[in-house]
Image 1 (cartoon, rainbow, N blue to C red):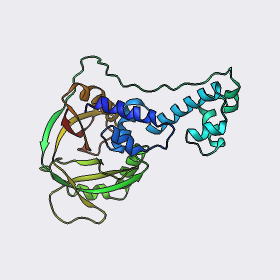
Image 2: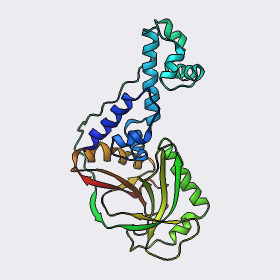
Image 3: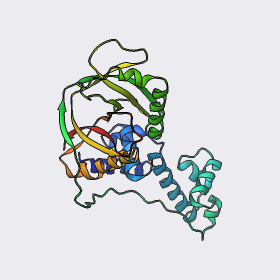
Image 4: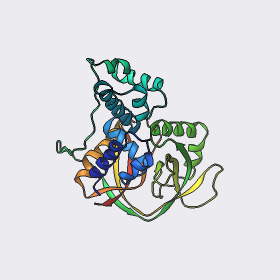
Amino acid sequence: MEWVKCLQRAIDYMEEHLEDAIDYEEIGRQAYSSSFHFQRVFHMISGYSVGEYIRNRRLTLAGVELSTENVKVIDVALKYGYNSPESFSRAFTKFHGITPAQAKNGNVNLKSFSRISVKLILEGGTAMDYRIEKREAFQVIAKRASYEGGGEIASKNIHNTWETCIKDGTIQTLAGYVNPKNVFGGAIVGISFADCNAGDFDYAIAAAYTGGSVAEGLTIEEIPANTWAIFPCTGKMPEAFTELWKKIYTEFFPASKYQPAGGFCIEVYPSDEVYRNDFHCEIWFSVEEK
């Protein structure tokens, strides 16, 4: 299914379940994606996390109901997922700038956060560099971490994982496995896994593996055969990286014959000079034809 339709399908699902507990895994399934991958893409495209979007939409609807209907604050609070009137009041006041009681009195200004509708807008004739490669299965040696809470705090956790691996020597250990003739050349990579448990996401820092002893704390991970769309990225990090992600989803996928396959996403870092304004890396997406 075309990714734009998948994204809209997931948003429609969120809208239809604003009164229910947030099921991040099911939201991802609606987009034929992993929970982590969908949340990461949604945030990069919309500027909001899934949780922020749902919270803002709930508070918008709660404001409308309190100001136009004869309802109790506690009933509205429970309806939109708050365990107490106090927690609801704090969130409501922060969003609208007035208390729920003031909203009930009417004649007040409320904030409105509108529903997202995905539209394809073609802008400029900018060119994107990419290549398509079909690769057989291969192995990596990795420091893999699993995080709870879906992709809501993905960027922070990924950053912390890299910082920890730099400080504890894991990066240096992985560098010992690097071979310029391997699939990633002389690069260390970051891998986002799609096959994680509901509500979790897995991420690994890794190097291509072709045999030999496995250092303590590392694991061997199998990357299945895939078709990969590979995008070069040059610029200041993380701004250039984030901008490329947006372009891939707003320009490349809508206009190409490919769509995300719901599998792995690999970040390829040929060097550790990430402070450079002309730093070069790559993003590998597992893809399939539409």
